[in-house]
Image 1 (spheres, rainbow over the protein chains, first blue to last red):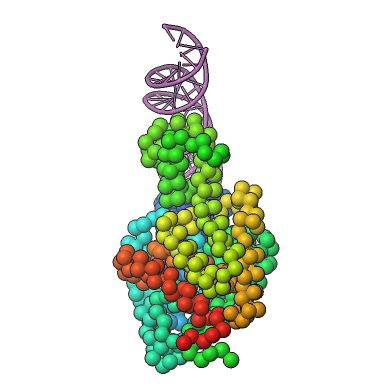
Image 2: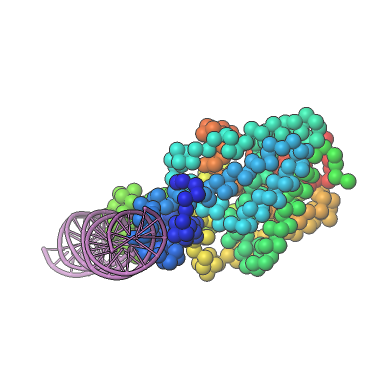
Length: 208
Length: 208
DNA sequence: ATTCATTTAAACTATTTAGTTAGTATGGAA
DNA sequence: TTCCATACTAACTAAATAGTTTAAATGAAT
């Protein structure tokens, strides 16, 4: 896929494909539905994208890289760890709020399609996990935080941000009695809550 | 579905159906594959379960209730909150370890099939979230823990237990360089880590 | 004006797939 | 033995679906 050669029709197809694939998954998506949503003929889709697989790969890579590299953007900065964590939590929740169905979609398709490694080519430059590790180790050395395994800390942070969206249908019933706005409020609260929860757990200074 | 009228053939079908549905999802599952895996003729499946939907509902309810009610088993006990949390984390991680693909499967199918409420009939007796809330409030009153929103605490705990399994394909690449046993070790560590992480965050006594 | 890429419409093909049918064992009851 | 329900199978049907083909319209560039 070239980068900026996309004309309006290609854009319409990609946009419709993304909607349908994300909502239904690869197996549940129908080429006819994508064509209808794009307002074009089915044959025209095959004119631009030869096959369903092709079209899927085009939108999947986009969806994937929308969520993964942004992860590491602030990992490289040299700010205090808690500042980085706060920025990460707020930014990441905002990112997911804008496209709440992408994480479950991506994870489902990755699980379905085990050979994604060849497709996705995640290189360590894209997601600087190592930079995160070093930040945490430095923060421990500086005694900003107590000793903690950087991997677990990373997974904790990401889990608490992402999981509520993936588990939303269950949370809506179990916790929010199907009150949609209650869920939205809850997500907003989490921007503050998660940061405080982590801060209380790992900072050396006891809370005032 | 009756409870204990299941003969060996029905069992074989249900077991095969569960494997295939969980691996491929409803849309990706093929009745022929289920029949093959069960070692029977496809017509025999329609003899016992009239349709794909029927068969799916049979295994989905089972999968669903395998994970949800167990959640609340210890919520009703009157032990100190941190003891309950420790029990929950260890039990729940063990539960998911035994069936690591169920959570993603359930959440994907719930998202795909918005009208699950009618199907699933989650009553508050099954999942005593209210009992959890009260436990937390009591623990705050007893000054075992600092003031914390019980809902966020519950979601934090569940998130940190479940998400690593849902996100395993990504974690494997990003953090574990596709070392399968590294992931397993990590999960074992989490039984201790998550409890300590929560304890450090919410208990009133500063860590020794 | 001619050429060429883009677009549409419609009918078609090949394949996959859920579900059906019609009939065959099997084994116990009458 | 005969009857009959349960368990089971091979072959079939009907519908859906990805993808193709053909022919024609449009419109911008040469």
